[in-house]
Image 1 (cartoon, rainbow, N blue to C red):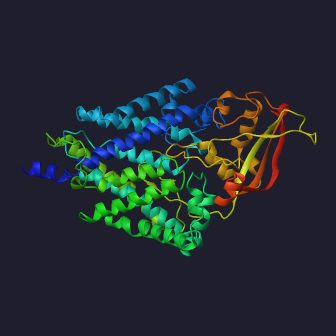
Image 2: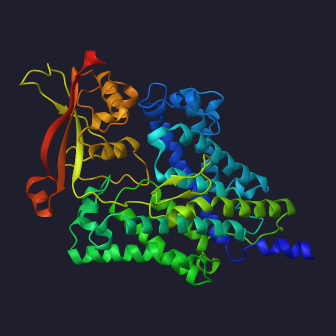
Image 3: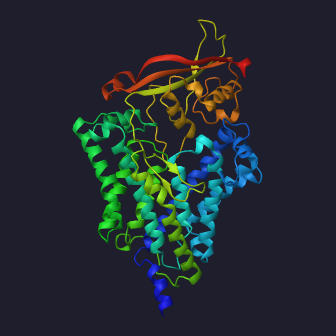
Length: 480
């Protein structure tokens, strides 16, 4: 009897809907992630990519960069592994493994975690975004959510809430310690215009009155610095806190493109929603008790998470807080944060090509366009998220530097464009050379600012562009 009581303590009654949403939500983000690998891995990190994964595999051990690719690597194998991950993730979205035995959903999520970790560990700067670690940590916790025949565990639900707490509170603290515009409540007067990838509504948010920007920042501080503590209080407080976070993340999704960060954070918040609020979900009551081996595993998991949480807690308390950091190669318990500083000026890099002699004053230069970059000032910013455009994001970072040639991947990008590499060209929205090799390429850097709606109606332009000047090149074809 005592044995059964001990196991029963771990079972969370009234959170079947939360488990349903967590499993399918995390799996859906894995679908996006593996589709992203299939589209972008080869030109970015493949054998002929901008930063080949083989360079990491040659110098890093399993311990430093855990990856199945240490056994063998090829671009074809990477495609096969990503395809397998996509298929398994889709199966979890529709609930096939969850309808099977205890081990089926556990093995499925464990496989997704191991496969995606294999890409992230060797993906270098193209896979160094905070939401990569967030997906891996959420995917690891999802292993232990269990099948529909068992009740979910408090250990796992509280672990998801602890993860959500670190995402929100970490972001709040990095802002409080960082740019003083967060303390003056003025950051969003710049942020919507200068964020990495604006979306169709970003200009509308940018043009809000000053008092609304102050409300935006103040509400952000409350949501990230106060509300997270309520996640660990009884219902309905915990659920209400989760709803506040869900609404805030939905607001962020409306105002910009942040890959799957906002979507995954919304998924994490469902760990605090009780069944009373989720009666519309197709969940059935558990038909079996948690087996002893799984109960022991959950206790071990709890001890592991407590142990691995010390570095993130120390980071949260540190005046030198790191924004996004993994404290172990497996990315089990990480530190998170976003936009500790906000740029006041939007710089953009415009990559151009010519078929003429680049030294001629009359050479005609034409711009390459990427899917989410505002190279063409008449183009409305697109909606990309929750998909992730890695090259577009890194070009935003590179544009902050007046000497972008210090980024090796950018120099290799120019060489790939000179060679008309078909895999790299596939990442573009528009190739002005229509697949032909240019005689030279160059990079110009300029300042982009939103124009108001009246100017757009008159001129068709969304952006005002100033001070475009060459910062790299021309690089001729023979210099490849």
